[in-house]
Length: 347
Image 1 (cartoon, rainbow, N blue to C red):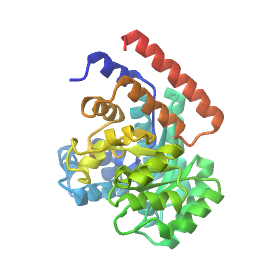
Image 2 (image 1 turned 120 degrees about the vertical axis):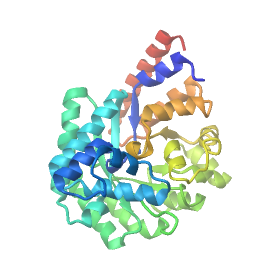
Image 3 (image 1 turned 60 degrees about the horizontal axis):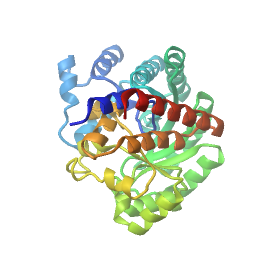
Image 4 (image 1 turned 60 degrees about the vertical axis):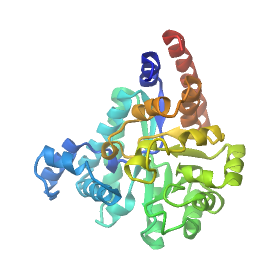
């Protein structure tokens, strides 16, 4: 059992979240209301029905719900609403900074206006900033199963979206059948226009996927990445480098079935190997978790100490795509607040 003082520390400590999907954050109630407003047929017509949708049985079921969430976002006001609700939800958990991925291909397929999309997202984040002081920035996460031509168009849209705060370009989607190497030119363009780059890797595919993302794409961060441990040489190399952050999402990995049980999840091994890691909720509504819950899980199931929890929280600042001066300010603020809370709670 987790000690009450430790749980209180985790709830109140300042946090960042770096691996989070906007479409996967929509609550069942909001999804129902958007579907009714926009006349999108979900196959259910009440809250209980939508909640049943969220209790999918396998990864394909998860994808069906994720796509349904994307379909219900049509107007700028829809994106503003879900961005605002997510940001407030994060602020309630004492998150100070977050990077939130959108799935551009889902909206490109529907010929959506990205000025309307990103204008809405920016408006929602701005409202939350004014009300709660939380900073949120959008990022693009392109499904690698779509064409390279569409990937290049997504980078162009991300570049145009930089005026709305877009900070990064990533690839996600079908990692098993689409390795990172074909995206070399896409990522070179993304870096050239000033976007940070990251990739889902080492989640479904093995350590070679991580190596390709690092060596060929030049990523700044890896989403999930736990299968890097299958290559001890690569693991040791990345631990020594220390400049590529692994955004780990334990509950997500269990819910999607890429890890069978919590006991089998290698979160502890990643930390012990010296890899720079952060904790994240990924798709919090669809996975039934929160960032706070992931930290509690790290203590209760993986034996993280308070020192280790503090180190992971600070890595969230070090790995964030923010200017150096802002990073140093946040590191100072986080460290001071961690120390104050530890003193208050006698930890």
